[in-house]
Amino acid sequence: MDLAADGTLSIREILKSEHVKGLQGVTQVVCSSNGKFIYTTSGRFEGAHAICAFEMGADKKLKLIHSLSNSGGELPNFSGGNKIRISPDGNAIYVTATNSNHIACLQRDAKSGKLTLTEMLDCAELPGTPKGPNGLAFSQDGKHMYVTWEFSKGVSPLLRGRVPAAERGK
Image (tube, rainbow, N blue to C red; front, side, top):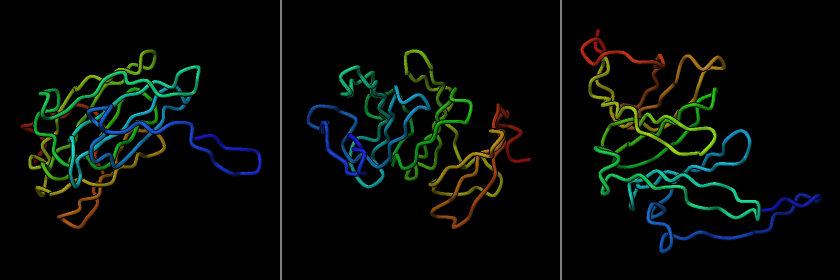
């Protein structure tokens, strides 16, 4: 979309799921701080159970970098893609998979926009076994991520960084 000086919007293009595999049931979109890369998630109520990465071209049109999905095997245990957020430092992306009770943790290459799955966090391993990760937010310093739980009806702060699975419940 283009924003005119008077505040009106005009649509430049619409990418549809018939042309981009991971857009079926798309629910969220985020943009990198420089506006060069756009990321989506899908599958909360129907669709692809996917995360897509796009690059904004010089012509102001989106070009698919890649699509990661449960069905394609790149996102195991990812069902119900709901919310997507870029970490404050821009180096990671986190996506809630509400239906499968997981949070996808991905490394983001700032130059290419490409994503690499680093962990599929099983929320059943967290203290109190919360269910249905939904919303995401970061503390200003980026050290904590806050997650809302749709089915457990609550909110939790999570410390960012690697915590061995055996120690998560302690």
